[in-house]
Image 1 (cartoon, rainbow, N blue to C red):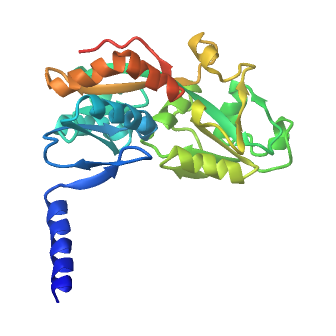
Image 2 (cartoon, helix red, strand yellow; image 1 turned 30 degrees about the vertical axis):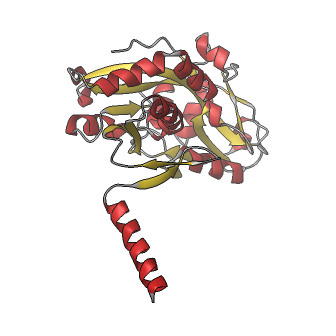
Length: 285
């Protein structure tokens, strides 16, 4: 009976701890860190899913340096970044594209933290290794419907894209001046979904962050230019996009200042490089 009561007591304690905001989360392969109300400050980032991996990597090291601050990344898409910052749901917004005029950019401080290339990806069994910009436009507008029209296999083309609010989609369509003209067969919310679909469909074409390309897909050259970090830096490969973080003007939150100072540090730059992005000179707060 005593043993039974002890089990009930322990279960209730766990429920109460959870209700009070106490959670356990992994910080490494070798251990766990207890997150309690002792972390009395929060820095919430919201927006582009393309920045998730980078923000998680930065956030982990940031919390090691500032143990009283808890960094949380919300995957809401680039389209939600400005709304979340204005409403106060997030301190920092993430976008994988430039701010739009309708998003009232004058309300924000906007900082480019890195650049990323956008790759056009095909199934590895598709022999096509290069496309012209004109062919890309005609493919995604549905004017070229079979790969044999441009020297490939007799396979119907399957157009795979991101959802409408995606910064990657915006960057891709803007680069080829085909905004709102693409006739996608399937639209996905995540880059991983596109990679998985193209890897299984020999007729598929999609787009994704250059540095996510691996496995059963390959990136094609555009207008004879290989999608590479050096070609992006040299301005030769133009299908690229900025990774941008925004916060409200006149927001003097010390944690926002610390975040951008950390991004400019040697440790922050090293993380950006490790995530296979192109670092830039960041003007901190």
